[in-house]
Image (cartoon, rainbow, N blue to C red; front, side, top):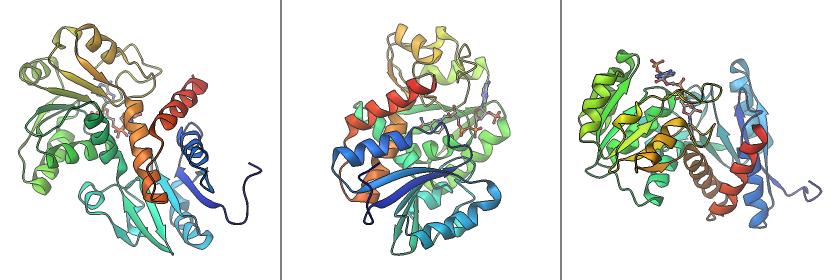
Length: 287
Ligand SMILES: NC(=O)c1ccc[n+]([C@@H]2O[C@H](COP(=O)([O-])OP(=O)(O)OC[C@H]3O[C@@H](n4cnc5c(N)ncnc54)[C@H](OP(=O)(O)O)[C@@H]3O)[C@@H](O)[C@H]2O)c1
């Protein structure tokens, strides 16, 4: 870090925990690749310290921030403005500091969309089955509905699916079906689906032997996006690939949210391949 000078611009991530974040490796490699005088640091911030941490961003002139669990919703009252998409979703994962004025964005959602588009999959008119109604599902459902997808949302706790479906439908004016996550409903929903998105934590390490969908329901003409990134190749993705389906893994979403945050902070196009490589390296170190 000998390259740091008095002019170096500081970005970072706040969350609790942040120790396992791949963003420092990914963003610092990107700054370096483009020869930008920026550095990206992890800041562990507990719930009770969030407001003080955001004041600190202004006081210290930190130019950009990622926000992760548990602060994505709680941070909103402390910001000066919100990008319309972040406002609709009700969650922020990226902050841009322009001379002390803090603007909140949601690049989790736009990053998810970009990962789909990169694989040549446009949501417009597609029937998309989303599993899970937690924090990550929110932005994904909004951006899919906004981009013309026909959504069916299934969740273990039906009430959460119904509540999210109501919110998304209310904000976007598009119909969203909500069902309980069980084999009968998944079977019916997947019969005519084009895209399956898993946003549940089923299959995430250390329960990597779990899958939210029986292998027999996976088929060739389906695109399967599992946002779980640890392991990169989840059981769901392995079984989808074996069924001949197109697959997209959670690292792609993670990288694209970082790519979009990088551009917001620097005004430059990010070196996507470098960021993918560093994210994979950081993941391997965590294993
Ligand atoms: N790739 C990326 O960039 C990215 C970004 C964000 C999150 N993620 C990953 O996405 C996953 C979810 O994150 P989150 O923040 O949305 O978590 P969350 O808010 O805790 O939500 C978890 C969701 O998973 C469901 N669930 C948990 N265990 C389940 C099981 N065994 N079977 C079926 N459903 C189950 C929950 O259902 P109930 O409502 O019934 O509890 C809920 O819908 C995590 O693995 C996380 O690492 C990836």
